[in-house]
Every structure is written in structure tokens, then in C-alpha cells.
Length: 250
Image 1 (cartoon, rainbow, N blue to C red):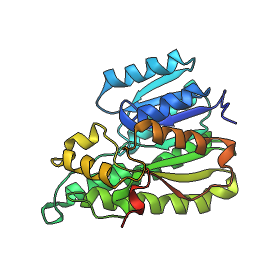
Image 2: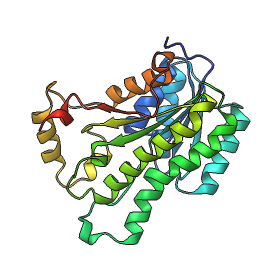
Image 3: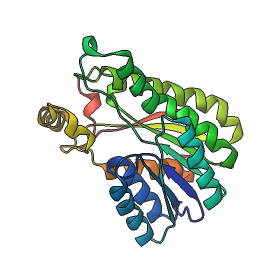
Image 4: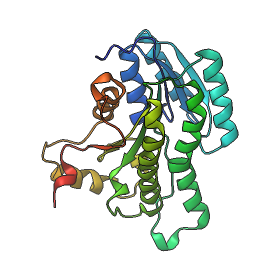
């Protein structure tokens, strides 16, 4: 059920962290990849080498997913290289970590464009290349439904992302395209290092997690693989939480 040989996947923001783990896990199961990055080219090339070591083909593309022209040019390269796209994983994320009273419209628009609106542009570009049975996945976080210190703009954008997934699921379901969200718990990635209270966040999450450890990028990648497989054929328009039980604690 996890033999995905011949399929093609695009993972945005896949030079590091969760995106990298998802790309590598898909490659281990036969998927050819498009690794997208915007700043960390060396990291993207390292991811590509890992994918190729698994026997997969890999196209590395620099593109800012918040820029419509960049996205269009990236899909031109996908079409030229592979001629199809089976899996779209919208993982790239950014945003300013500030209290709500310190946010500007620029901060707000930045988070919304990269974390939410980009999925719409990506899906629109992907559809001409995506056959029935394709999958679109978005990577979210618990900040979409819980208040996290200094996470106002990013959390709101993640909530918008999860809503967009539900609307896309209704529209694209009749075309045979499954659309879902993966919401990750506290994962110690490069992004989390930007939080001034990183140690407090990780320590608190570990203490509250019933399974006794933090979520890893590989945990998220395993769920992405499942959602790209036929085992998930009736999971559609859902937000799957991967957090070891953290979010069920009162």
C-alpha cells in the first residue's frame, strides 16, 4: 500500500525540518520529488542528495510561494521535468513573532500570504497536472486553534489555512483529489529556534504529552505518507493532529 513508484510529489519549504522529512519519506516509497526552497540552497541540495540516494529523481526549485510569478515558474519546471504532479504538500511557512498590539499590516499580510494564500495559488497551478487520486496536504500547527504567546499572526494564518483546506476538499473531491491538513505538535525545528521562549515551549510540551516525548519531523512525515497512500482513501477535508496526545490535556 505504500508502493508509490512512478508518482511525483512537490513539498514546499523542503530544504529543512518537517518538509525535508516528508520529502525523504516519500522518496523512500518510490516518489520522485520537487524540493522547493527560498533561501537555503545548500540545505535543499543536501535534501536532494538524500532523495537520490533512495533511488528517486529530484528537481530543486527556488521559489517564494507567496509570489504568484515564482509559483507559476516553478510549475513550468515541474511540467517540463515530470509532466504530472500526484502529491502537493504545502509546508513552507513564515511569520513575525510579536504580541498582537505590536503587529503591523505588513506583518499580518506576510503571514497570511505565505501560510494561507499560497496554498490556493499552489492548488490552482497543480490541478492541470494532477490526475484523479492526487493528494493535497497542508502542514499546520496547534496555534490554529489555541492561543500561543507571540503567535497571533501565524496562528490566525494557520486557522485560515485549515479553513481553506476544507473548502478545497468540497470543491476538488468530485475530481478525485483528496485534501487534508496535518497539524503538528511542538516539533524542535529551525523555525522554533526563533521563539525567544523555545526552551519553555519544549519543556512544557514534553511535560504535557502523554506519550512522554516530543513530536519529530519523521512522525509528521509518516502521517503524510499515510495520507498519500490508498490506506487514506476515505479521509478527506480533515485535520489530522500529530502531537502524542498533547492537545487532549486540559
